[in-house]
Amino acid sequence: MRVMDLAIIGAGPTGLEAAARAARAGVRTVLFDAGAVAAHVDAWGWVRLFSPFELNAGPAGLALLRGQGVRLPAPDALLTGSEFRERYLLPLAAAVRQRVELREAARVLDVARAARLKGEALGSAARGEQPFRLLVEEDGTERDVLARAVLDCSGTYGRPGWAGPGGAPARGERGTRSEIEYHLPDPLGGQRERYAGRRTLLLGAGHSASTTAIALATLARSVPGTRFTWATRDASDVPLRPIEDDPLPERAELTRRANAVASEPPPGSEWRSEARLLAVEGTAHEGLDVELEIAGTVWRDHFDRIVANVGYEPDDGLYRQLQIHVCYASLGPMGVAAALLAAHGTEPSDCLLAEDALGPETLRNPEPGFFILGAKSFGKNSAFLMRTGYEQVADAFPSLDLPATRTARFRARG
Ligand SMILES: Cc1cc2nc3c(=O)[nH]c(=O)nc-3n(C[C@H](O)[C@H](O)[C@H](O)COP(=O)(O)OP(=O)(O)OC[C@H]3O[C@@H](n4cnc5c(N)ncnc54)[C@H](O)[C@@H]3O)c2cc1C
Image 1: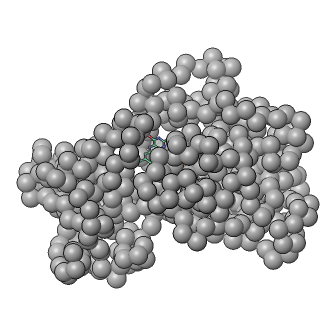
Image 2: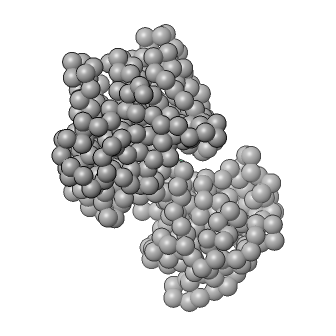
């Protein structure tokens, strides 16, 4: 069977940047996406990015597109996810496709060494003598793909966490999972009918939950009967703690607007802190009965909808048979997790500031030739920005130890 030099899992911003770099280096590469190109960005396409285009485009991607004369957005443009996908990621995929095998609707199910078990040749470079075997599902058929190196850029958006206490399912949540919205809904656009005139329970205190809170508040102010309870876990004055001296004004503005929704909610809506979801039952058709603990008191209530924007997790099942060292707290690769903790502790962080802290060494794992890059490398930590993923791609490439990357040293991050 043919052995590819490189397999990339995920054609999101990070995977496409890696593919652009591979194309430039002449590495024989296959790029898989379980959905369409940039499927995750497409899923939240109506959300406006808080970083300007110049931070969202990678150096290898830009070089490839400029070489083909593609007209790009202005450096300071603040695009929506859909605009970013249409004006940058899709043209990049088309350019990459000329030199890289790009397979959409192809889900990687598992990655292992072709003929070595997880426990063999512990932490040894000898594991690299065997190619990786990827089990890929495509058109309802499973097939094997062999590759010398693998970049896992599969993100986390596809795996939302649970909304119950401690991140485990609340009572009844496993049975009602399909009735709860765990991703970003679009109450002002395509899902207006679902939320207009309804009562919604919103759980979560990150940027996703804040985006949803602002959208629900806007809807509530224009459609009578629309109400929501925004429940967050911590005992704090505001749902979202601002990043000190945030260098991204749009992100600071999102934080300010979300906290304003909490302090002055529309009539009939409320923000409750110190809240935990204990139990849930029912359907989105008939409504959902919930048991909530708020500041130590247990309440029973009824909602038409539940939105749980409580974070996302990496799919570690993909590399269960490899020697991957992950952090017990974030589930991200240990080197990246340790560097983030050293740089920021547990404070709300701005990973733009972590640039110096995240170097090539943080990406290394006991498994030679396997790298976890992009949003997935931050594990459950949501403070990831695309620019960090592009830097990781540049850092990982020289370590791939493929014939083409050995001669062509694309270390420069710019
Ligand atoms: C609402 C929202 C707004 C954000 N705004 C910003 C912002 O303004 N600026 C910024 O820098 N960052 C932002 N981020 C954070 C982050 O940069 C993005 O999530 C970005 O899309 C991450 O890129 P990625 O390529 O690492 O992963 P993803 O974009 O998640 O791409 C992963 C890809 O892998 C595919 N995939 C998953 N599993 C498999 C599998 N088993 N086999 C094959 N393919 C698979 C998916 O279909 C997907 O296309 C935002 C995130 C969200 C959720």
